[in-house]
Image (cartoon, helix red, strand yellow):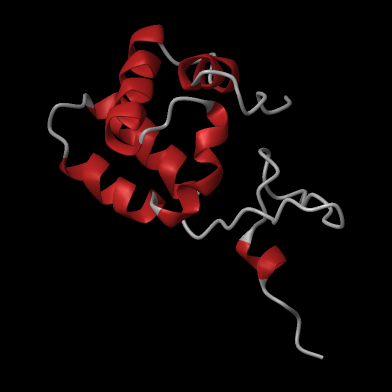
Length: 115
């Protein structure tokens, strides 16, 4: 499944990526991302690597979230911990690995090999 376009609203993106989840859970998760980190569109997750680790801690401490939504957000944010998006320039190639369904590099793909 292809990732949604960056300008797609976050709720719509979550519905596309996680059709197995209830609409109510996804609405709560999207609202939480918007309220806590200003994530309005799917593209806003591009910089999530900078705040995802702190976001996981906030999710874990947020008693207003149901257990299912809390687990969903924790799993979602943990995928971004340490993720650094590639520079967007004319000479850059997108990084796609087999290890991640969303095209995000795995840690072993981002560590330079010793020569």
